[in-house]
Each structure stands twice: as structure tokens, then as C-alpha cells.
Length: 253
Image 1: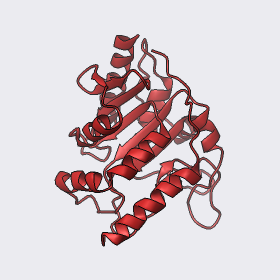
Image 2 (image 1 turned 180 degrees about the vertical axis):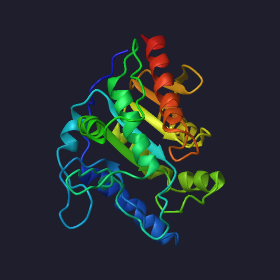
Image 3 (image 1 turned 30 degrees about the vertical axis):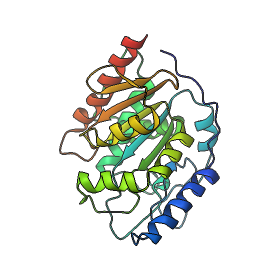
């Protein structure tokens, strides 16, 4: 199959407007402030704190035919509703390396998606250099969002996650549609997130294999991944996504 370039233009401004309305309703419901997320920043390092700055990520996103969206449950820090777009950073000069398992798994999987085709699954390399992983990350069109924007410290049950998605369904749907990704990696391991996005945004998607659904009209693949912080090896997390992805491409060719 051939992925299509987006016919829509993502902007941080429109994404931020959705999040502003989302937060307004969250505060009204007594649930407090929310995190911000969307297309990952690709600029340099903030000299004061170890965070990425805005860069050319919007241009990359809007001109890419592989737009990869990772969808997770919630932030892990219950007291810090930070901006998820700033966190993937690497500064070898200052010794800053990724230690968060979810983020590093995202790097491995992004590199695998970027370098795999229907005829070739990019081989997992546990000892791949951070420089190579970051080079692939910075070349790729990547976004990461959470369906529950109020941080929960990884404590929320799937019932709570489902309720949050229902309560803020309008905004979640708007954000997913604005992003218009064509590879969506749903990171909960149970299919709760995938089923919600499939039902609300891609109701005509058809199952291709055990872990992948495909929406023909939008040329979108939805992949049911493990949670990327699960007690599994990086290779297991990687193989679940990449092998399913390559198999789906071959079947859809």
C-alpha cells in the first residue's frame, strides 16, 4: 500500500485551541488542569531546562506520507501536567539520555516504522546508538497524545480511562482528526483505546490481522500495541508493532 500525504494542515495553534476548550471543561467538571500534547517538538534544547523547543516539526508532519501517532492512557506524574511535546530529547554534549521506558520504546518503534516496508521488517537492535535513534526520530513525523489528559500516575483503571474518553469525546475526536495520522499506535494492550478511536473516527476500518485495522478511505492503519511501559523487553514491544505492521502492508499491497 502507499500512504498518502495529508490534505489537511496541522498547526500547533489549532491543536492548542482544542486543548484549551478541553481544559475549560475539565476545570468545570472539577478535574483540574490538563497536560498538553500533539506533534512532538523537533527544535533545539532549552538552555535553562532539558526540554525540546519548537522546530520544523509542523512542516515535517504536513509534508510526510508516514504520520505516526502514539496514543497512550495518561501521564505518569499526578502532580505535573506537563507538555508531552517537549520530552523526547537527547544531548550527548551534556550527557542527557532517555531513561523513560515508554519514550525509548517510542524511539525504537518509530525507527522501525520509518525503515520497514511490506517486504522488509527493520531488524531490532537493542544496542542501537541513541544518535541513530534520535536521527530517525527527528526525521519522522511523530505525535504522541494521551486520551486522559489529567495526569494519573499510571493508577487509573480501564473503566476510568474509558469514562475520560467518553466525557471528553468531542475533543479527542477533534484532535485525532486534526492530526490525520496514517499510522496510529494505540498503547494500552487491551484494545480499549483502539476500539474507541476506530468506532468514533474510523468506523469503516476493517481488521487486517490480529493487531491491525485499516481504514481505506483515509489510508490509515490502527495498531493495537502493548503499553510501552509494560514489563516486557524492548524487543517484545518493538516486534508486536513492527511485525504486525509489515504483515498488514503485505496483505494490503
